[in-house]
Length: 285
Image (cartoon, rainbow, N blue to C red):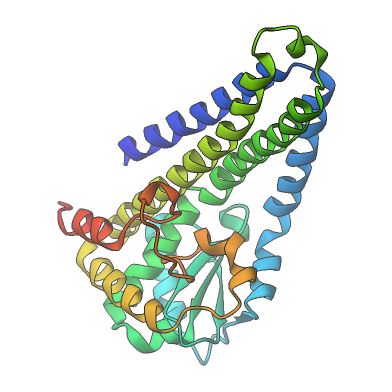
């Protein structure tokens, strides 16, 4: 767990370093400040209201406690083990087996599960999934993701400014340097790609951490491992149809709901299921 936390800190530091590098190459404090305020404002809104946006996007309904008494019982038990407030529980009506957690902090946390996952998994497997999502809440992954998204967003915005500047000869200080415009253009293209790769790496690291945290909360890594295998097979047969609306929220789910095949893991928000399963089965509690 400590290893994953340190990895996240190192990746966030790398994102910050890229930001400083491209900022130093471009210069102009006014532009950098504007970009930081703009991206920070967008992610501030996302941080405080994203849970409402996501729940509405997927037409999630708050679970009736009488109808879903067993589901609530498991959530309460896991929350007690984690020393956290009991989160609100929502249901997404879809055949796809999946789940996600959202909310800016443990007091405002929401855990959503699909009708498909409740039909597919056994009680112990579903409990493993719920523990994984509670792990995200416990580790404050929404906050970590927001910070990463803010920095990556600033880098992308500055890079866009730099590309236009290089094309139209802006930032006069750079024009006076031999090859300065070319260097600026190359940096402006490479920097956002590097930022995206690092942001995805942070997302994968938090998935591993949530797997580990969840397994420890219930003392059972094997049920989650089996659940992940079942979920992956199910998602292949029942991908979400509204592709455009899920791109920005795919990282929230326990398994990518779009199930697009990435030939390189570095361009994926989730680790491969096989890696996650192997790690879980190798755990010693």
